[in-house]
Image 1 (cartoon, rainbow over the protein chains, first blue to last red):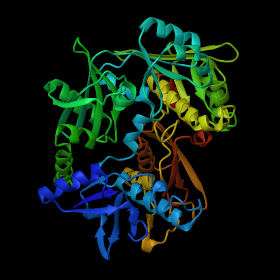
Image 2 (tube, one colour):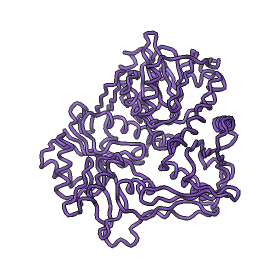
Image 3 (cartoon, rainbow over the protein chains, first blue to last red):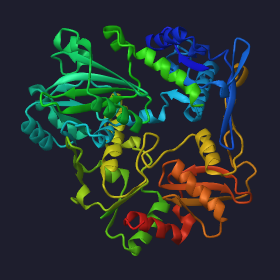
Image 4 (cartoon, rainbow over the protein chains, first blue to last red):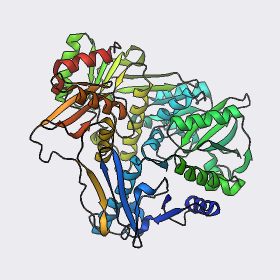
Length: 311
Length: 244
């Protein structure tokens, strides 16, 4: 049986649930908002992980789950606790419930999309970029510095330069302009990541186990996620094919990063060089599926079902 | 040069520093978080094909350059919050995460041996949850107490984490590159401690055992190195000098 965790109406989770229904695959959907009435416990004994959860009076042994798809949101934002004081029993209960669930699936010997620890490579973009280049992808020429002179020299060398956060904190990727150059001394307070702008076509590749879905993205914006804000028009998405070699490369990189499900942001230059900017460990795939019809959710469902044959 | 990254009050690290220098890791430059963050001209470059470099200048003018680094003993627990105390409150968390991300990258980019490499769960190696340690320790062949966690019946109860409950004495075994180092410990226990380091993907790991029963109690990527004495210094020297 497959365990689905999160907010039932959230698109990525709802889509996978629908696909599992189509397959006739058994699953249990647990809304994280039910933390008060879904007892959950696990134990570890000599390397063996067991436990149980109870939903509406029915007990489920955790060992009977063969896969987990988790879309748990930050429990502190749940409506049930958002307005509670910090030490309120309800808030502590929510914290402990979510912690127990997460700790269990981090070590359970089953397919999990995705465990928390491997998602950590995204907490440092240049750290992840090293894994990217080890797999044969290019990465933009990058300088992380707190020295304005070094930054100015880099910008002068590459003419078009973008800057972004070094950590996993989301930032809007922007080109350095004259206003930014005037205030560049501010980087003395904290290093900033500068990258040479790469010309080419944006391609988003989703890998789900061994399956690959490639989406071409057309926009004049620097950051296609904010195309409407940056350029006044949304990006245009369409399904595209990539070579077998590139698909294999993407799968291998996702495996290196221990991500059964990943979203790779690529740019393919006019000279056919493939740059990888980021491997997203929690891709909001429904945006791409809704614009292109690519059955990413079906692949996710198949991957989760496939866990039964590996348990 | 070799680098030792540690807090100013990390006595075990400073103890190791004098002994490693005497063994031949010379010069060994000790860098505290304050020295790191009050240095300037940080320059971390990643080139399109994968080559990378790091350099920064300490407040006293010394320049640290990746080309000259031959090994790193990394015991940086985290970026201390006071480093960003001069920033406005709204920017402090962001700056802490940015500095952490930078340290994760430059340490990982070095060709020289680094004990330990930074990971998401900790700058000096993974500070794993007790449930994970219990699981890994069992996989490594160590005897463990049963670990329990959960929210039964809608009521939270504290983690029944593995504790020193009932343990009169704790024995710390230092495992380096898959080898448990303790001349007075049974070989199978030493092997299990070494295996735990491998399973935890942590090159330098301190494994706490119940001195009486040998049962696993806990583990740390920043152990008290003095517990292992000169054999640990010998192993560290081998690993950091590239002779391991």
